[in-house]
Amino acid sequence: MSEYEFQVLTFDRHTPKAVRRQAVREHAEYGRWELTRSVRYEGGVHRVWLRRRIIRVQRTA
Image (cartoon, rainbow, N blue to C red; front, side, top):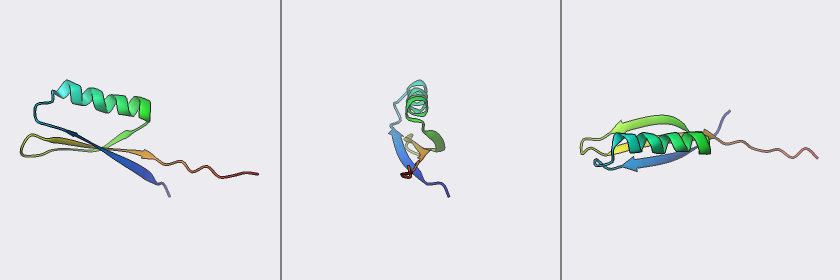
């Protein structure tokens, strides 16, 4: 069974679309995050949920 850790990015209504996209892209490329969910709320606030798999290292010796 896979375990994930989550990170939530919140952008206000004045943040340009290009800046939001660049932030998600950098997290995906350098932090190995993947987009799980994106919501735009009534006031214009964008919230993006990212996740990545937790890799457990087992001792072999």
